[in-house]
Amino acid sequence: MTLQKLHYAITISETGSLNKAAEILYVAQPSLTGSMQELEKELGNSFVENPLENMSFA
Image (cartoon, rainbow, N blue to C red; front, side, top):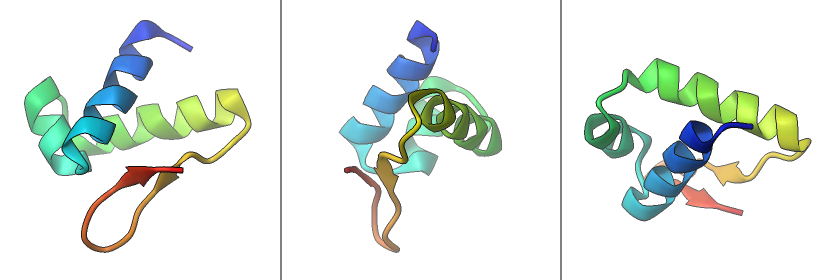
């Protein structure tokens, strides 16, 4: 787990959108998705919920 991944997670939570977070963080959306998948794997839990309209943390 890195501070960068935690920063990514916080930004996703604040914006409610992976795409908006990627824009703010100046990273590609697939890269951001991969980082969140790695973080979830490290923590052993899926904490990002992805309904059609927006994202939220479980």
